[in-house]
Image (tube, rainbow, N blue to C red):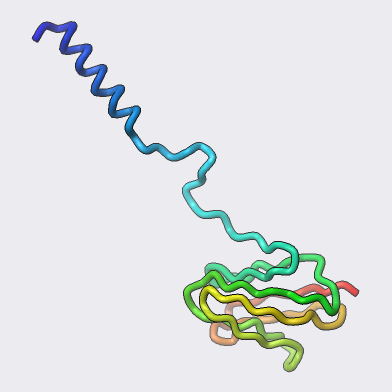
Length: 119
């Protein structure tokens, strides 16, 4: 095979390989972004609470568990709220009176956060 044909063949193969590669879309990120709480949804993901802002007393809040294990949302002060949510499930409860409410997950005590409830 003569040199120009060999060069053309190599260039053609390289172009084919580049065109068929499955590079990431520039709009995609390598890691999944952290889920954002929306409106009145408290999201549990990667053993972390993502707490929504702007909650009002008497409002219904939804707890969405995106983990593969069950969690609780339990107020540090006994009796204010205590809900269990299974893996992949959602539960709802009504927000208490205005104030700040530290809470935790009973089976995973290192999971803590605070709900701030406006009047």
